[in-house]
Length: 253
Image (cartoon, rainbow, N blue to C red; front, top):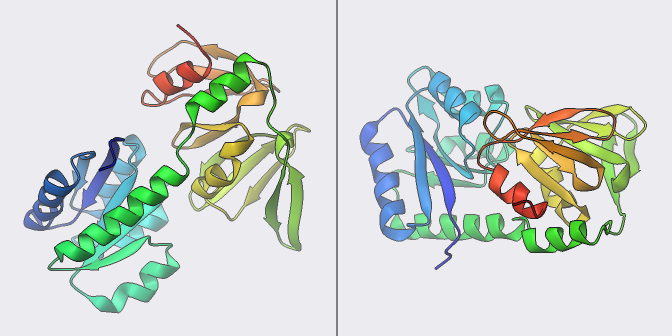
């Protein structure tokens, strides 16, 4: 079984339903910790803002709205969103909201296993290789530059990845900051950029921030995870959870 640790949020307005998911994870996937729960749209949005989770289990019908409201309102969402509901009529809407999977209540153990096994494969497929990055930084090596397509009103703009200083999440959009001082807002999630750019020397230092390590000037200690200074003078917050991994990358003691 996969030994890497992941975090999950469970959102459902029924405590028994939340308990079922938690119990299944504890029994079948002890490497997935339920780090927070919520029973409403407002509660879910608040939890997502302060908890960096890898998987979101989301009921469709909540006491003050529905799960789709959570997706629309939250600035940060895990890349793995699994809808859990007693109704199959919302499947198309879930797909349109980029759902990773759609489970019907009562939850089948077989369906649950299949969904979580797929989720773990996806999470591991784009998890950072910190050893490789440490070697790159220690030897002052810059990854081979590639290209990334930025959607625009007229089509796609092909940008050299080393012209990107950082990317910042803005709901379902991402603001891309370039070395020439320009910034582009594109209709792609930060998670999608992360998967595309990890091999190019980028690192997710916060649920809202993905940075190009080749443009980092300094790391500054401070509250929580501190901050990093980038080319151009930007100071970007580092999350408490990401700080140890980032310092390992920098080979700091």
